[in-house]
Amino acid sequence: MHNFALIGAAGYVAPRHMQAIKDTGNNLVAMLDKSDSVGIIDRYFPDAALFLETERFDRHLYKLSKIGDGQQVDFVSICSPNYLHDAHVRLALRNGADAICEKPLVLNTWNLDGLEDIEKDTGKRIYHILQLRLHPSVQKLKEKIDSDTSGRVYDIDLTYITGRGKWYYYSWKADEAKSGGITTNIGVHFFDMLTYIFGAVKENIVHYKSASVAAGFLQLERARVRWFLSLDACHVPTELRAAGKSTYRSILIDGETFEFSDGFTDLHTEAYRRILAGNGFRLRDARNYVGICQEIRNASPIGLTGEYHPLLKTIL
Image (tube, rainbow, N blue to C red; front, top):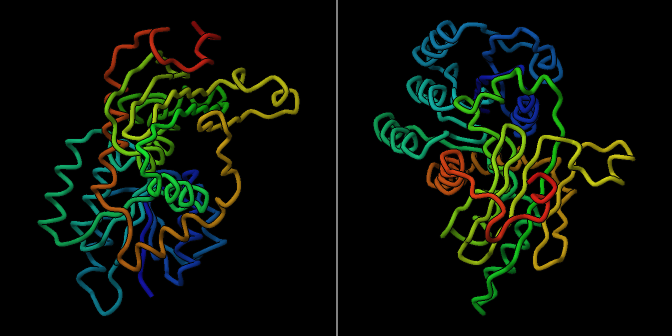
């Protein structure tokens, strides 16, 4: 049994990590969040200590590391806001623990270089959660593409719309310097999945970008990808909105739907199993998606030019 600590215990994704820690037979001993609304922990580890200040949490981990005798924290799971991931990973490693971090691991590629240095300095490891890579349908598709030796380049349309209320624009997620913007908040999962399957980026073009919508084109080694991301539920197809739906996700590969709606339930637990077995995703696995999002964030949109997503015509 390993001892875990968790940063960002009141966040949306934290319960998935709590469940994964429990499902893999380990123990959560301490957690950190500036909010004390963490009653959900009672479902998993009611004896875990809660800290509201980073300094006291840091001191607690240090004390446990010095006590030894099975008291030390072996892993720190990080579910904090995006811009704090780098600092919280470093906190974990300085206290003798490996880090398990949610996406995005960092916001800029140069931060990865710094994390490589601290791995070398401490001898500890940094893992991060790329759960879509573990989805059975994604693994099956990757096997299919890898076995296709024809050199064929696939045409892909990625559409992801997930309606967000007014609260979003008052939160840290609407601050591009803290979240990385819409592409990092909701696109990073798909950019990682597509480059995992179809290869590295050869060209990255942005057609449109705002606080709530972004669209562009990625030329990958084995695919041409037109992508559209939106936080505005009005972009959800009419028939789905009429049924009360505020989310729409679609991936078309050469005009055919790639279906992966099911099978998400235990992906975080599977990620933890792999990490505990020494086979988790590492720093090198973050470079493609971090680089894509960084380039999009700094790009100047070119409008309705070239290979743009069809939905962009509804905006421009």
